[in-house]
Length: 573
Ligand code: DGT
Ligand code: CA
Ligand code: CA
Ligand code: ZN
Image (cartoon, rainbow, N blue to C red; front, side, top):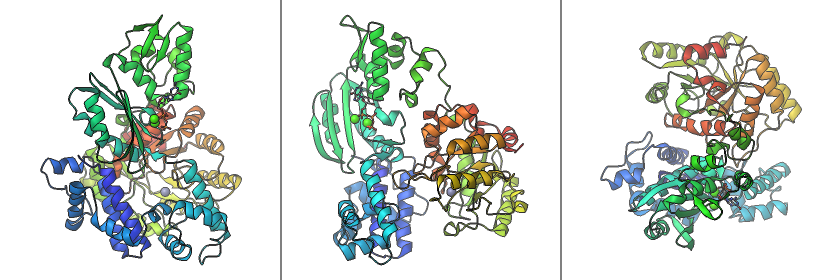
């Protein structure tokens, strides 16, 4: 019963958190974090490989000791060192680190001084104002903690799409092994590629549902079987995620897939159109006078009510139904439309892979170009580059391009936008670059008017090309900064600047609504990974998903263009 890469990675992350709280050697902590990232981004199921008699694959930064630990997890489902550490330091403390502003030091203080062992303990202590007097805290921090707890509770246990994907992959692989299964698909918000999912909704077809339900509840990661029936079962996994499995006959597949993909608002609108045309539409089929009509596919269901098939990402009842009726659904951008990536980091700043390894990974994907955008000097914690180091990097990229065949490495930078709206490097250096990504990293708390002015001012610089991660949020951890996004978009269009859709699975800014606004205002977008390792270049899919949810077409995205046209598009008028 294979354990998923995501679950292996989660164990290493938890171990790293707990060791960090215990003040363990930082190199050791970092080694576990590196292992977590390497496992999470590995494209094949490690447990499946081992089950097939292969060794644990060689992963970047993962030595023999860690590979042995991965092997143990795969074989036993446990990491003995984690169990050992958890005896000394409560596991729930690693949850506290999910709250913005709480690092290992502060979590340790909270635990030692106030015996805080859970999110609930933390909420109570903050509400009773017991935190503000701790050394290194204060009123402002106490309020930040209270906000953070509120956000965590509000979003409930919604899981980021990337994490849900890791779970979904191994669960679907587990179910596919059952004889007689035909279709099997993860529907719901997961199929609509929403940035977070509340639960997973798996839909399968089989003549006999029994064996499928049996295997579902026997999945090794199940913590609790909440219900088990012939057509529907629900389980809760150890991570807390709930999963529904529905099994329907093949003849209901089209209608069931439409229904369980949702959204609920889309379904209700579809059902109303059906009623007007004399049809009843539900999860079992399309009916006329109690007689089931043939509708084996989604497209057939939509056709019955005069609509074109609607891509799942658009099914939110935000105008897609009218567009489908009038034949004007957008032709959404696809991952294979992208010709390159316009935001990544290397070891020169805070990336974990070398320039060469990043270039190789991009070439392997078949990209025409990859830009290197290491941080600038102000971002000292990320080892940002000053003028001299950036010029040296430019020369190394020139030398590399001499040798590379097929891929061009573009010279760029992720230039920090300073508080006064100036850029962190002088024009004399910026002009040596092919283009820039400019981002806000500090002063996220500025009021909206000032934040907006700051960014507009930065855009006035003729070397400003792309606004990087344009809201600064981290999903579930840090709210977006306050800013007038519409004003920024209008200014970007006027000046020929571009906005980034970050494919980074923890960021995903712009939001879907932000992407749609950009499209409507006619401002161009770049879909970029902000990759900090060669493997993370594969995250591009999450940015494409988000853009598709925002009705974005290939035409709206600059990095769908071949290099020569990209250069013309990025040049400021
Ligand atoms: P989530 O799980 O909160 O991320 O969002 P969904 O969209 O996956 O919602 P979920 O899991 O409650 O239900 C899955 C799908 O089932 C949903 O997208 C549409 C359909 N559905 C659920 N409840 C209703 C309902 O009351 N009416 C209709 N028409 N459809 C529903
Ligand atoms: Ca769901
Ligand atoms: Ca559900
Ligand atoms: Zn950044």
